[in-house]
Length: 304
View 1 (cartoon, rainbow, N blue to C red):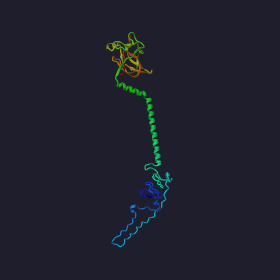
View 2: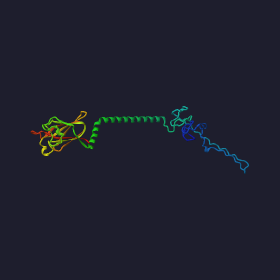
View 3: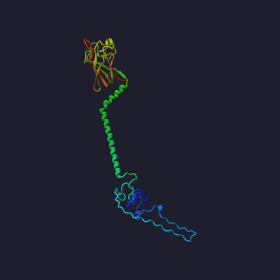
View 4: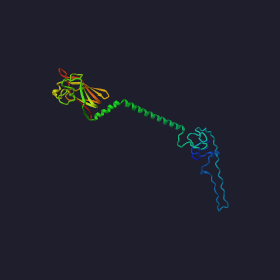
């Protein structure tokens, strides 16, 4: 190996041009020695005539230092991409061809193998990103399909709790049976001492609405009257089923255990698109002798 006289880079002995700066190295190969730097080149003094001396003295010529013999070391043939101009093989990372000084690559350009590896890694990362995005979209779609009913119920429940309740009147009411003088219309009549009289368990009263409505809750008033003296004159329901029918025909049944007291029992319904609500009496208290089951009023509420 030898050093470039211009930039000092290490170059092979048979290189004609420096691979870093492109300096021509053929002159050094011809002489077999590296010329001294410009500042060290021998100079010839110009004789100056002096008036005191008859003749000018010519200075002696400086003798160049004798080159020291160096052992020739065989260097391996460079292996690399060929020069696009002359076809000479050049090691990687060279900027100029070792024979014709043709520029081989940009200063900051990566080697071919490294560039290929970078492109391969980039393509692999891009593929992984696309697969992750696709999997996320699929999971979101599946979750939306599977959790839609649950998500809708949660949203409706939050709206029910944060909204005021407003009364909604049914369009009509019918019953499976009633004792004389106490029809099912007494369930929607707010007058005192008016009630629906059911002969026994199994009887039902059904309320209809003229349009689908979101029912939040209902109040059930038991007994023939809310007055303490008359509340226990007849039997009262203790267990009922509330059957809600939606506009799409789906039916929801809510079993309810009632508290035997003159104050109304609030029953949470929280069902949307209700068109019919049926109350089925399953059991009663104080149903003895000639008594019948009395229910004085039913009120429905929606979101305000």
